[in-house]
Amino acid sequence: MDSSLYTRGRDDIQYRGMQLFAVQLAFLIAAGLFVLARAYVKVCIVKSVAVDDWLIFGAMIGYTVYGGVALHGVTNGATGKHITELSLEQAAVSLRAWYICEVLYSPITLAIRTSICLLLLRLALNKIHRWIIYANLVVVWMISIAFFCIMTFQCMPPSYFWRQLYGDPGSCINLNIVPDATIAHSIISALSDWCMGLLPIALLWNVNLNRRTKALVAVLLSMGMIAGVALIVRIPYVKRLAISADFLYETMWAP
Image (cartoon, rainbow, N blue to C red; front, side):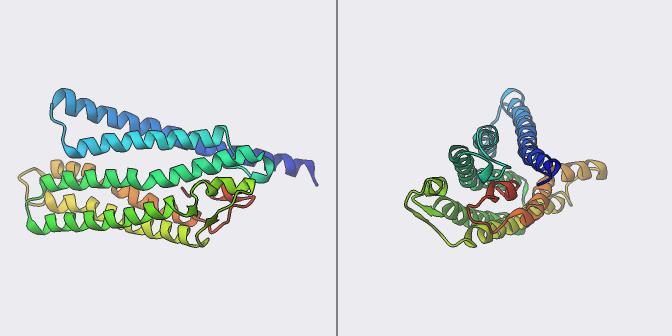
């Protein structure tokens, strides 16, 4: 084998792990700063903390755990690398991190979407608009609970997800169920984000504000649509792979 190809391959493996580390750390810091700013305004200035605020604070705590687990999987495990390049212990650390992040993902995003819906309910006076928000809440809760159950119990016992590397007894559901559920959850969540992102435009349509202010407020309230775009973009990264030599490498951006 050409030694230069081997070296480039090793560098690529290391680079993919550091990519995830950098992206995860950047998002974790950015989210933390925004939530701290919100907490300061609501607690110190407005002096009124509503249910939607507590949901965001709870989601931030969950996301901090999520980010910490993901970073641990990169620095102490094999995330972004080939399992065959490392020890079983390193691979198991990353698979455990992968599993924990899968399980945490649904409750975190559900808390965020519920918070947004509760905020919009306070602004919505039209009965149709309120029913749209309620319907969105029902759909989001149903798909999130279903997705959480699939992720949590995809293997029995759950620890078999990473312990199978050691030859422990156990079993997992059909290989296609998890990626199919992930794609379904992504599509429905994206539609929900776009619906809740466009709704502020309708809510502000008859409000007595100048056009510039309306546009600014509508844009700020519609920022969640970006999350919907991200959900669709990540779908191609949801691979139908078993726990094989390339699982942690090829599915790095899937969780």
